[in-house]
Length: 159
Image 1 (cartoon, rainbow, N blue to C red):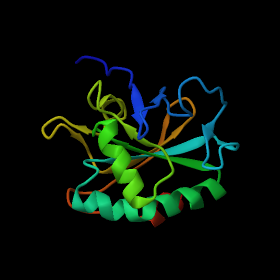
Image 2: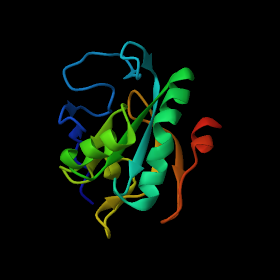
Image 3: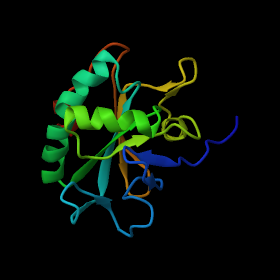
Image 4: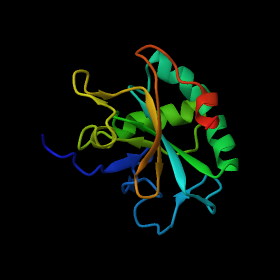
């Protein structure tokens, strides 16, 4: 088996992000930047979307910004990751009023999802899952939803 490639993520604005996704590349921080832009967190939920414009994903996007705000109060960051290219994620973020990072895992295709064991090679997309990691990328917790089923915001808060 070939080891996973290091993810090279881009946010909805085309800005590169290193792995793990603490902050945009070039910004130095000792933790995950929170929505206020100044605070940092030691843990982060990586919420994988199989496809940004799919019906279940768009329903989940309806609560993800609110979830990000609740998690920030607990000192936990949230990053949304999809194998869609960055130009697809920008209109999605604008349509749903999402200000948190929506990161494209397009190339190398699905590298972040593969690294965290959440890539479905048959469909070429990430599974509908959320993975809680620390600043070193160590997996702390995992939430998975069956195809066609939604995750819940509460499952991310009740640890």
